[in-house]
Image (cartoon, rainbow, N blue to C red):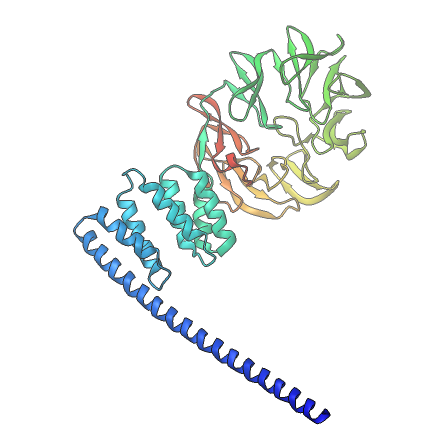
Length: 452
């Protein structure tokens, strides 16, 4: 019995192995058949595509585009060797018929289909971008080009993006004067009265006041008929200065300089007056401001520690009173301007300078021309311009001859010199002086939340 059992088990094992071999063999045969059928199908599809494309081309040659459409749409529906060729022919026909109802959508749908493929090349993205630029849909074009750069790294797509990304719109509202932008708003003057406008040109605080500070933390300091008080974003009075306060400057970081008995004090936005008195004060930015004492200027922090001792004729500030950004400050002594970085004076000297903004290079003057440096004093854009502003959001206003335009961080003029005056970009917008008055220009790309 034991011998019989062993032989029986052995036979079973042998049978199982034979069955596995047969199954494997059958599987291989099936795969060969499928591959063969697929090859035949692919060959058939390719031949069918060529036939459809050829027939469509005959119609195109005769100018009968409308009848070429269904042939090319069928050809493009195959997954074969000539699919891309069929799609490209189809796009040409769609563009010819683009003014007919529905063909613009067919064209853009086909572009979307091509751009969604993992192996999509940069030329498809650029074709799509060119179409959207031609139809004035520049925001869509910018998104496509950014996608092209991210996915392909193509330099031509990057160059195309750079050449178009500074397109702008000019807001219709014009003012008598506009200050530099702060907190996405600007102080504006209309009919000899002051208020606050958003960077799209719309009024936030009506132009009703004799004087207006910058808008910060939902409040602005105003003066009307000799009374100084604070209003909120809805123009409601929220604080009143004491009668001792006779003047004020710009509000930022909950600090506003106020004038009492010919001395400047730091006050909060609610008019809590500090103890320290100065001969003059600037506007706080990044925790520092210019301060004057004993006839000399220096830089103090929020608790009046001196970052730069009061020993200079001037601390270079912008029109709002800001002097400090990126840990850098310019100080003037006589005819020379020095650069300070983190409170340490560097060796470089200049004829003049503009303060750094939160990013980018500062404009400096040498030999009566303006160029740009980084915070360590390295020249980044050579001395070429008749006047210049420091960079804001990778753009800098420059004056060439009598007119102003903007350069990018590489020194390329990207917004033509067509403005009588210009101010720095902030939040994608910049105040410019046109023949109509002061208006805001806004980069089209920025409207969709892109950063520069």
